[in-house]
Amino acid sequence: MPKSQRSRKVTRALLRKFPLPDPGAHGDKESRGRVLVIGGEVALPGGLVLAAIAALRAGAGKLQIATCKSIAVQIGVAVPESMSLGLRETGDGTIDPGSAKKLKALANEADAVVIGPGMSMRKSNTVLTRELLRSTQSPVVVDAGALLVLKASPAILQDRKGNAVITPNESEMATLLGITETEVEADASAIALDFAARFNTVVALKGPTTIIATPDKLLFRYSRGDVGLATSGSGDTLAGLTAGLLARGAPPLEAALWSVYLHGEAGNRLARKVGRIGYLARELLAEIPPLLEN
Image (cartoon, rainbow, N blue to C red):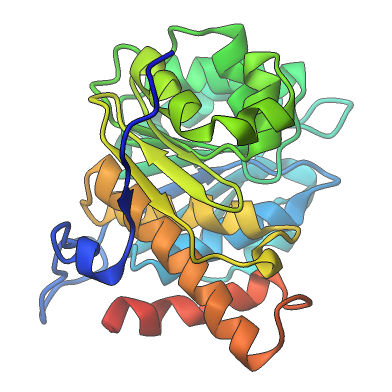
């Protein structure tokens, strides 16, 4: 594992060096990119909704959602701005891995794909994720239950030309590495750097201080987040923001830096309005467009 090195703070001043693509005064929804969000289980539809709306709040122009057939209509109603595709499901209420073939065309036509929101770490989800990552080269965000594919198939991201972002929290990273969460927290920067290099992916390792690391050993940290962000659905929101920025044309590092910053600052705005704890992940979403304008 590489030695920890000096990291740069993620601030508004830093982000000026990593500007997002300008949509232009006359841009249409096609020019802002299409996001495909894949995930959800019969028992976990909410995370998918949060990620999907977050992608639009980040400025993506078009949204497609792929999930279990029995909840697709409800999700389509909850996110009327989307196309909602219902897929065959397993007896456990997850997307049937055989649906990967049906998803291949959609994923390859998308400007960004996020897989994992609303998914648990089940074998069926790992198989689905592996097949999707093998069949598409679109920029991808891997989150939540989909992350387990990196333990089952360690080389899965190696030939993707670095166009992937993963968004594990410290507990998920501990599971992937077979160590304790305490060990991850104690050496988060070194772990993120090593993981980014070995798996050829940008890593946004979520925690009290979120660490962003790249395959070429760039290291950044965002420390302004507060305890209120540690709430159900918060991670799904971050994954959706990242995918939305990728769809707009931001490179993986820029998408990760901006999404971590927007996510954290949205929480800070709510902390001032509502209180340090008790605000909801869904409330983060409306705070994003004003932060993009500032």
